[in-house]
Image (cartoon, rainbow, N blue to C red; front, top):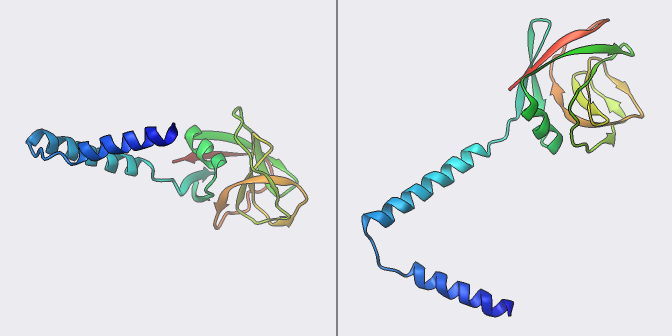
Length: 157
């Protein structure tokens, strides 16, 4: 039954595609279709980095290519007060939960930005070994030591 249906659809497409009409209406429809395809392709462009502003200094966060990042980007712009933890990281528990794909990181690099659980955003400002699992958001090159206490961090597209 499926074979007959496929053959019928293919035959109809073949007959329709062989039409000799070349009037302006068909040409305009073809041009409109082409423009729609181009617009769709442009809208599919992925964001590869965003700005992070900490203490009036702007950094570039180079993003991973994953579902978590897509969801995070859709929340932006956002400003967080991030708290100090362990002398090596700043964190905030966001109101929004994100999709996770956590893994045991083993080693954290200074500048890594990770998601702990499904809503805890973390910026690491020192390198160290760890046994915890995270979902990677991205990495900030040349991140300064963020020191003691909380910080304000603004994330923008």
